[in-house]
Image (tube, rainbow, N blue to C red; front, side, top):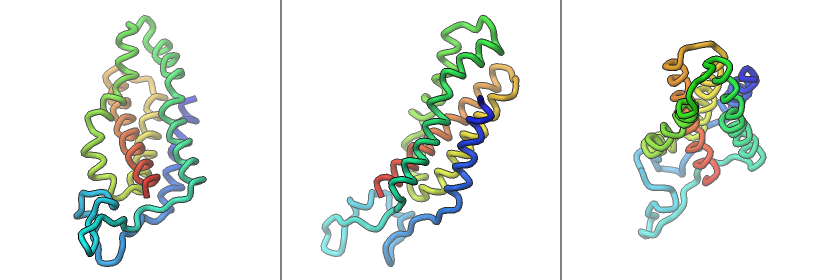
Length: 171
């Protein structure tokens, strides 16, 4: 199952990589402005929205579906995988391994949002690539510490993906 789980985000990465990055309005440099577009002052000092990322709803839902499939649907399979590879592993260790990507998200979401929000499509490509890599690492019988590394990589991919999808949806 993890082969399929790894292949779908990799396919999504290839599809998203073919899309152009969004562009900002004339004479603006969005990479130097940490404010969201609607909060940036316009010519009269009032907040105005600049053109942001545009993506069709169907494509956005498709990417989000692949993203969710690669990150959420794998949980029941993780339990079986851990039971198969590490019989007798304490339930607290199983829960901890499941929690690793979520802890990474909690620690990294703010700095990732600052960095990834400027290039959401490239960030989504990287997210799908990292998720595919992490899930592929689940295919290989490795000791628990290397599985933790795979779970950290999955967490980085989850964080990049959630931020990129949010930025694309907001645009």
